[in-house]
Image 1 (cartoon, helix red, strand yellow):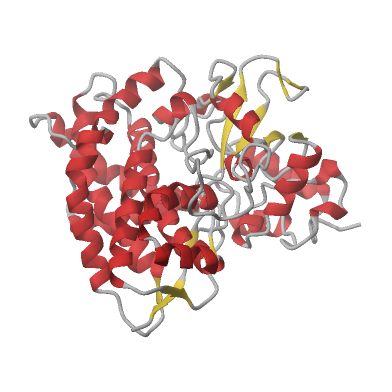
Image 2 (cartoon, rainbow, N blue to C red):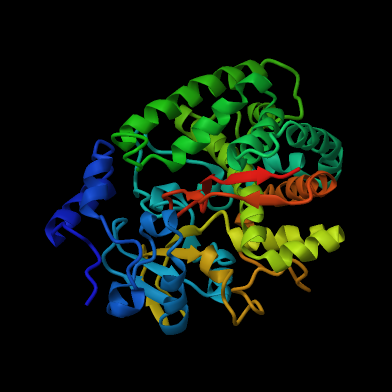
Length: 449
């Protein structure tokens, strides 16, 4: 029988889970990593079903999560995990069940005070590490705050932004090295999204990489290679708060403008936020504007290289780009999961969910559900219905910037196809140790003359 955890005892792991779920931000990331160390290549079919747990970050870092979801979809699509490094939770792995949870916000709460939208959320947290944000609220507060920023993502606004995005994409691509390996993530994906974020917030372009640093920080809070403890990571996030608090207060005194900070500063629903809520909403907008687009731009290059028949199809017919864009987003699934908390006793797939149980929608698994998506485990750039995927969520929490993300990806590939005969992945990609953002940190690419 496969041993999942390599060296720690059940008691040691339980003690660490209790400390982290109790809100202790000083727990050493190294201590947690060692206590929950696994061989990420273990076979989930060789362990008892009740021990299958797809939430370990190492599975995502090493891209070995797929068999775990495959088994759960087939054998127990609504699966209770009594023990995990994030505490007990239910895995929802089928497309239709993810849709059900996402569209029943009356039964499944997103509130930060109940645990929020990600595994590891701490209920009833009211200290300086609490990050309330509108995606971690229920109606009516969620609706009122979300409404503040939606005007920036209307079709008219997106149409106005497209020439700027095209100009920037062209400039980035024209300045890439030829015949030498470089990191596509840093040179292209990060650069375009950073420039766009600075525009949406109306902050100086020279500060754009600060936005990326803060976005990366929120994903790396538990990474021992990045921070000794989550508390250390929050020191960086408090720098983000200080930066934006200055703009927030200044724009309250200025005439309203069409940027995210000004919109937050002038609307009654958001013009009097305390520091934690301001930081939470800023981080939501930064991560939301960065991670979907950034990881889809990188994920598309990787997917086409891993599926040369599809790359050839694209080279022969660049008109497939509009269909290819949502397929890239489905395939990459940049947001791997969203969590909820049951507000009452209920039922999913014949399983009894108790009030206050944590429920996790694995979007990355729903996007591989063969019962909902034909040939779901294949990357196909000319699907008949490419927008049938779970990557943006559903219901009231559907990604507010989904059309902007699609537009940036479309424009980028239109400009790529005008310039390069092919983008060749020439090294091993490096992923992100996160079960929330399915990310790529390094993608070695070479452009041949």
